[in-house]
Length: 168
Image 1 (cartoon, rainbow, N blue to C red):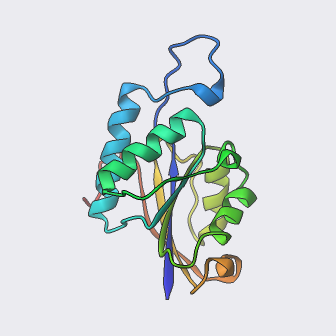
Image 2 (cartoon, helix red, strand yellow; image 1 turned 60 degrees about the horizontal axis):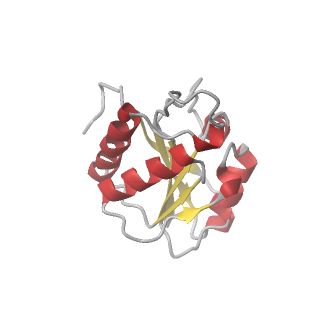
Image 3 (spheres, rainbow, N blue to C red; image 1 turned 60 degrees about the vertical axis):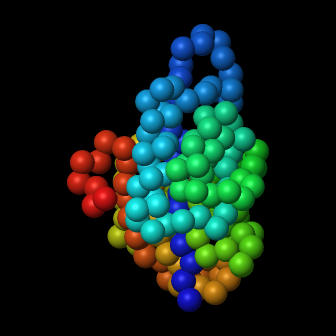
């Protein structure tokens, strides 16, 4: 059996309010549009989430909520303050701790952790930077999330709002 992981970088945030804490920055209008767009693309790719884990930073929360709405996800989102600027190891810990009843999980977080994580996690895949609202989906050949580290991994898709070669 395989399980699927969708790593999502938060959408474009606003820098309009000078002096605003990084944690409190909201999405700008383009970010809101892109989050809905990418949620619809995920649904078209057949990547309906069983669970969504997201950073508690405002821009990540808004991204997760818009993607949840676009995919028809109606369960509670798992908010985790430790996903704010999480290291690759923290992102992997989140994967390993997921409930085995879930087959597809989304993680909404921040760079540089997600770029570093996917570059290390997926054989043959490299990117200099996951763009805002970029999505990277990959599968692991495992029955349990705890087997993540020893499971064979395969890229399913890499997409982002400005990608004109999207298959959807």
